[in-house]
Amino acid sequence: MNPKQRVVFLFGIVIFAITGLFPPWTVVFKDDGLGRVHAFLFSPPTENSFGGRYIKSTSIDFVLLLFQWFVVGATTAGLWWVFRGPVRPAQPSEGSDSS
Image 1 (tube, rainbow, N blue to C red):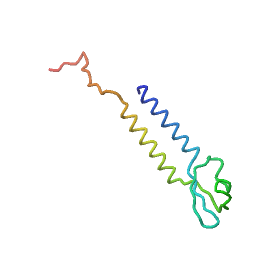
Image 2 (cartoon, rainbow, N blue to C red):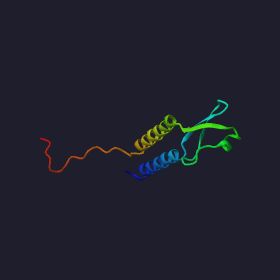
Image 3 (tube, one colour):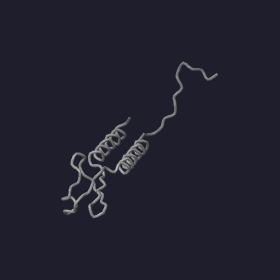
Image 4 (cartoon, helix red, strand yellow):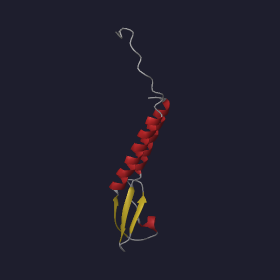
């Protein structure tokens, strides 16, 4: 792994962790409204997040979170592949004969 690949890999890990710490939340309001917001994992959205609207329930939107993780992983893999450097042909070993 060359230095550019290492930076891409570490950047991917950091973004993956941030999206896990601040996942997308789906919020159902008492007036049957629906909202989405990103909030800290251990501090779900409250009424203050939505201007005092009363919240019926909150849950992490796992489908959107998994999609975000897929996009981060695919982008990291793509950039890691792009920065792989020049491909060198295999050098024949000194002990092998071509005849």
